[in-house]
Image 1: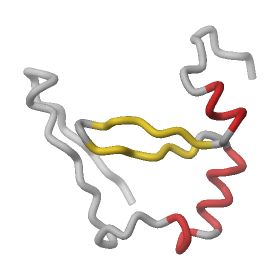
Image 2 (image 1 turned 90 degrees about the vertical axis):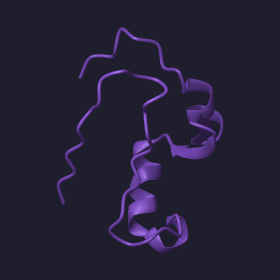
Image 3 (image 1 turned 120 degrees about the horizontal axis):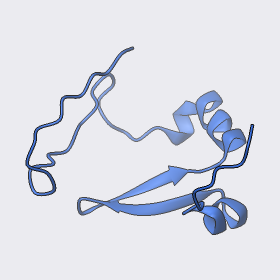
Length: 76
């Protein structure tokens, strides 16, 4: 696979910590940044779960950042 021509916005966090934090519409969200780290989280999901209701994915409103409504399709 070729390296992307786009810069890696999380390169420093990926190399130093393996995770990063972002502000998502006023809520701090932790991003797991490495493939191996994501696999660890998946295998140890009880440690890395969010505490949210099982089976419910909250999609925040985007009214203040876009005029056209976007439809979301979630497949399980």
